[in-house]
Image (cartoon, rainbow, N blue to C red; front, side, top):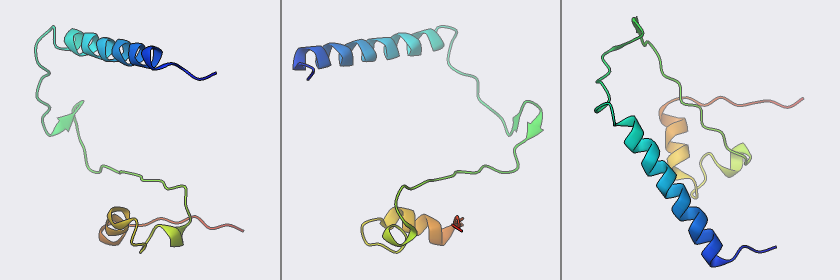
Length: 84
């Protein structure tokens, strides 16, 4: 069954309204406090960002259609899985 445009628009508007309510409730106590260099009394030493791709290595790395991911792989690090 295909959803009608008015129904999709209504769901979209309800989602936006709920998001606005959540943001308003979050700021009701004032703006968030600034976070210093320590979180819960412990310094953060490392932050890892793991990017996954659902295509093969050769179709992503060094491919002209994926320049951003390729640049990240060459600039930082690349972990590959091996299949047996």
